[in-house]
Image (cartoon, rainbow, N blue to C red; front, side, top):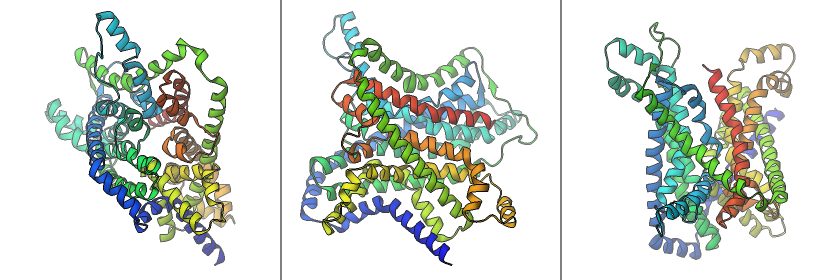
Length: 537
């Protein structure tokens, strides 16, 4: 009986570690003081309404944009056949490789007042002043988010349509329904849950963003949290503001969960429907050109143009690039990524193994808590992580708790685990779903149990899912900005932090090098994802 009790204690400890940041944010309301009350009262009378309105308008624009772009592209490549379709199927995933803040830097460098486009137009037409509106604006931020995040909707909608829509569209065609009616009454209702889930994921990323909003000067809730904390030097007020953002994220998470449940109901079994061998509708002439342009525009706006805009200053002057410091930045990023990915995969394997062997209430609760972090913005995690540390430092000044969290990589790795544990868990659990339970029974009959079962039976079958989990966590850690920027130790700048700092200082030519390095790393999971989708056909 001692081993299960020890395992339960370890699971509870792990759950406590994962849930501390969120619990710290919620517990901030128990430490109400006059200073934080004055700050919140002042912000409520001045800027808090603007934060809420800006975040709302931005989310509405992003939801509309990613819904239209992602659904239209998914429908085009799934239900129609036109020249270039197979290339665009995977090319539409490429914007996932570029962090949104890198896209913002690229567009700003090319489209700002002193950029090459406006300078060339003023010289060509003899005009003075601004040629077109400032890119650093709310519409500019919406543009960046739409063409960076539409793949969330595209992926889910494409999967939903490929499962059943093509076959049911063929059945409707044989019954005499025209194409417009088939799209309106068959395809779109089937894709609606997937679209809702994708929009919810895109909105979570929008609310969690700090790089684009801060760089563009957009006063969103994430920026307000950092101002209350760093500019006004009040962590309690920042945490209390973070609870508002946390409530909105929880509602979006609930929406995504319900949409995913409806999506599982809508996409039951693929294959033939009623004996029909369904084929996409072949487009020719102007219709084919229109479909190609529809799918090529998001790739152009979300990947090709940002890459071209970043390569231009690199090609113009290689001498300005800090090559010596770039090696150190890259080493710091890789070190943090490898360490976090290894820990996340180990913890995910242990939790998934425990859940498979003993799916009791304690294990399920810990796994669910560990999986919630991905929906929590980095700003909330940072605030919730440092608040308990500050309370512990006040209660026991002799303990070096603050040093271990802020002076070493422990704090930033802790934040990474809270933020990205869900990524590793989903990949490992999907691998476990393909391991039949009969293998466990056979191994026990042959005398293998406990950790030996995990090492000798499960691990050889879980190597590929574990490798995929490590890759995804590694790339997410490389791109993470808010938690890294606040919690990193001195002289531990990463590629993401340096790219943000250089862009903020208007040194966009130098920011291109770390930004392109992040893009190259981000291409790895995109290639993996495109191969996975191709293998499932």
